[in-house]
Image (cartoon, rainbow, N blue to C red; front, side, top):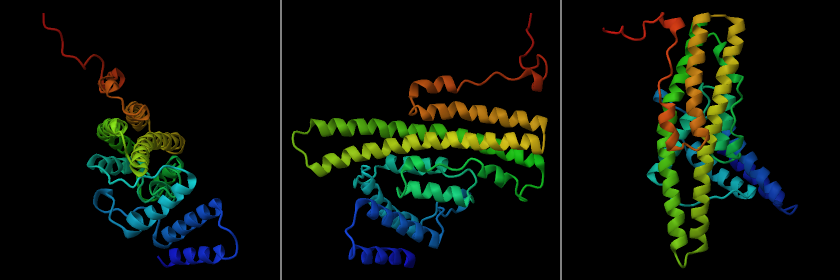
Length: 289
């Protein structure tokens, strides 16, 4: 907080000497958020099961600065209260846009600056090579454990995609109703009209951001797998990881397309089992004559 006040005071002194330009104002807001975040740790604090913990810095200070930054960029900003589903959309989305390794300071910083809109949401990309650096740490005493971690993370992500999509579909349908009701009104205030349009835009950006973040997770998993395959080869683990990533990819394609409900049934079909790893002809019961 002290750093943030210093940044604002510095900006105030500067405005007495030279006219404030939009670009300069934007830089001042971003700098203030960066100083504030770095002073308290920019990654979102987490508690049990890596769930987000309440934080004044991350829940109030950074979003307020991010709102100013978004307005200066020309991005729509809505002052509407969130619906329950809109809150849930952002809560479930956060688990998919944050780095797969929650202690990733660099990736967590980028995501948090984008989540609070200090940076544009589409710039909240987690560097894919950081995940491999995490896997190479001393935390993993076994080479097989590194492969198992990728498998577990990919499977965990796969299970989270459709629950997010269910909420995204409800939010999208509600947005259609919102716009329909807005257009049916003969008279409305400019504030109400702009707020509705901005909220629809914000919701859609959040949905697209999750699809992008999942694609970067796949890239991080594949980057780590390609490197581990050379550093510590493990044939059976390699097949398991590849299978988990491919299953995840089918769900990611669904999210990238905006979670269309018509495609879910095709994606949920169980893939054919491999006879190489499960035995020849043992998958089906023998025919009874």
